[in-house]
Image (cartoon, rainbow, N blue to C red; front, top):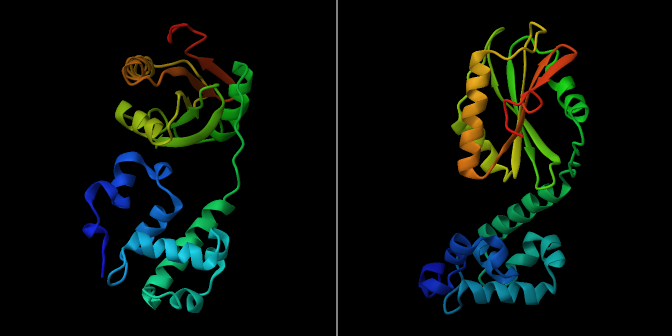
Length: 227
């Protein structure tokens, strides 16, 4: 049996994916990784080529039964099940509904987006909003939930989230259950720390919005975040 480890290192699909990412791999190489090993005298990449040739297209391969898959020499029941599970996962990812981006043209737009998510919370909650290169919000997430008067977060956690979602920039938002959006000293200190951290990472903090009932304060508008 020929396994991936027996292929020259620079040609191994797994190593190529590790160094260059999945987009750099051919369909055959991706399929070879899913298979894991070939058969005696036949490399796993060659086995992947045989599979694609046998079924004619990726779509046909996706729809092939376990019995049909096992008719290919080197594909046992376990391998066929492994492939079917991989295909099922791919179908589920494809079925996830597309989440539209939310454009922000004004502070009123930002408040309209954030307020329904935060203004009725009984504890302070911090939300991070991810923006693409055009400033559209494409993801938002509650990062921390605190007490009636405070919530503690760390810049590391904010930017870990931003890096994970590949945000071009971020906006922070949190609520004051008291209804008074006036920022505390801690709010201001955290914001300044996030601004400096964002500059170092190349992920700017565009604003920090505090929601207090039907009112809000924008750190950008107040000049706390430099214009």
